[in-house]
Image (cartoon, rainbow, N blue to C red; front, side, top):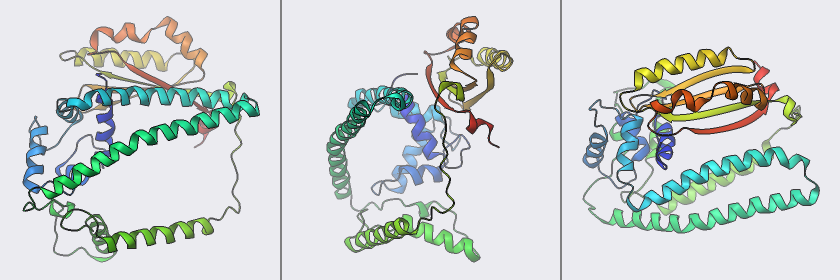
Length: 321
């Protein structure tokens, strides 16, 4: 998959509230409405993205539309993609090596980790300032357009009885507690800050650790399983051939020594697949790869190479019911 596109898969997962593999009009408004765009503007945008005219947006449509509009952001999104992968890999390796380090090396690791956070925050600040400035400027344009709100697209039954009705009313009220200009009023903001402060105070003094048992897990490799994830995009016209090869691969892998589970997730109408494999150990997975290389099975069926990540986890988590 082209660099930067995987970020839109994450956006899709967050927007698809009911996890049905498609973004409905209501979900689209709930996720993308920014307090600036009007209803007609959002409807046009929704229809422009929905190139299949299904009244829903799938992963392929979302990735394709925004990828074609990245412009000067394309390089940044590509770097973010690389950064996400590198951070994941570094955190995994650090989690394995940190317990064996001496106190000085542990201090250095913690210092470097904090400095990474500081550097990322320094990059975040100008982005936030630019984003806030663009939002403020957009709210000043076309002030005659009423920004779309979630309640504008939700069903409006005459009566919603009982507790469900009261909860729905509170949710809609909380989501739309903004001024006409699209920003929270000073009094409302102060009230929210006071409520948050009170909540934090109650949480800080109200947590009961009585009876709490800290799970003491051995981090040695012999007591861990390996979870491997592979993401891939199937070449157009190769879907049937790919599915046949994938079924055979899953059967072969599930029957091999050391393989605990193999499962796959398909993103509807996108050609995107994610394969999950759980192995008893890295050695068992490596031995299987030497006999049956993954790339040799699917290379000619994919639009691009696979993206692979892996992580180990305690065996006790797998055995728990």
